[in-house]
Length: 396
Image (cartoon, rainbow, N blue to C red; front, side, top):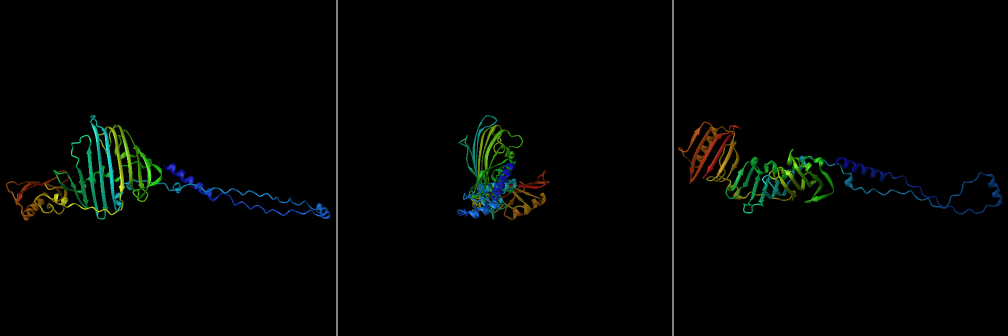
């Protein structure tokens, strides 16, 4: 690709030189002279003694030298070489806002010969100021029409992450590290950062406008998808097109078809040993007016039962997950201090400690509290692998 672009640039330069230096301007043809009258005999004799005069100029016009036609090379031919980087392709968060639609299908068979026919759609909305995300994921298993096909909805407002986990669980509050936005594989798909070996991409002209954004068009094959399949690709072929914004370098669209003759579908579908995977990624409404608001039922549903607001935690506490029925918190505060914290705070909030149902042994303690018909179970312990204090609470 680099060699081809260099040749195009060289050709454009040569054409430009030819246009500027196509020869000097041709001299104008001399004007025709009037016919010469017959000279008298004496004059003729005198003239015979003089050197012969040059022949009279003829009246035949001299054709002008042809001026070369201007070159017809397009401005694109003289464009500088485009260098793509993985950081650029994943830089959607540098935009002020966007809406992204990713559709996916996987059809074939698994290692046991069972059919696979899955479809999915992921819609993501994003605003940078204030920082917020909303994601709606719909997954459908077409081989089992009776299976529940509910959508999963999640929000990230600043550092708070909320997701709806179905009717049985309801709304959950999770840490940003545990959020679906932080999943490396999902992030690759929803950011366009699935491509490697970018030098293998082939430029396609003319450039196009995608969603109102001037974009460069490239073709690619399985050589550019090393991140998906790793070293053990198997018998896999792929074809695709990707459009990259000229200003900013982010992906505006890609379409991809993967045919798996043997092996697996990589991160897209590791269970698929034979079949076809199709994907379509399209960025929409870039830097437009998008508003993301957390539903009231999300904050209310993620609060532990028996608490009007969020479940209390030490100053350095970090929510890992929380819902109406349970909460998981991590803290750097020693176990003994965390135990003392909850005994004081919960009693102050009107909870009554069940002394007989509570026990403390070294770096672990289990407590039971009650309030207005709600029973709260609290387990505080030290994680031996991290040294952090783990707090688990459940309410019934």
